Image (cartoon, rainbow, N blue to C red; front, side):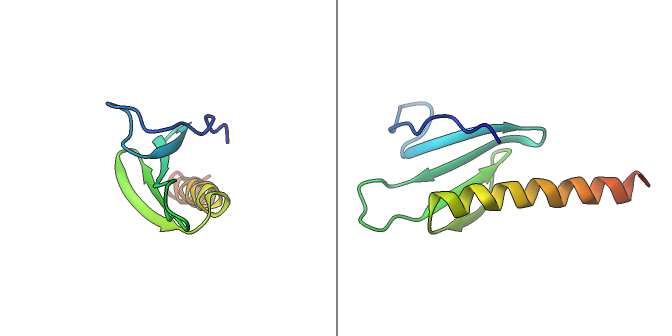
Length: 80
């Protein structure tokens, strides 16, 4: 997955530190409060809240697993 560089909060984009990745199911966004000593990483996929993880790498992995699961669901649906 091609994640953007980590960006600081920007009006109209995100109120928190964030990174994005374009996917076939919409934009995957991970946001966190970087000023916190131990932040949590909120994940949205296609403008819908998905889950929260406790490291950036775990959040990115959770996005990948979600997309792979959706791919398998589509294979079954399409009888591939």
